[in-house]
Length: 45
Image (tube, rainbow, N blue to C red; front, side, top):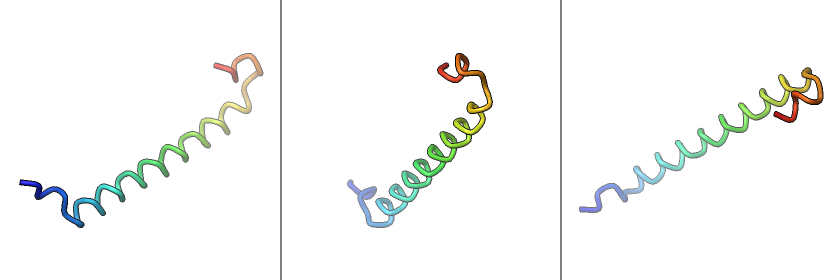
């Protein structure tokens, strides 16, 4: 019944979560780099 609680499933889930966190951080850095060229009033949006 709880076949999804195997070590393989848990390790796969953790890998997906880590990839998601890395990509989210990468997107935040790119948005910050793009926003720095905008005027100050537009940067706050």
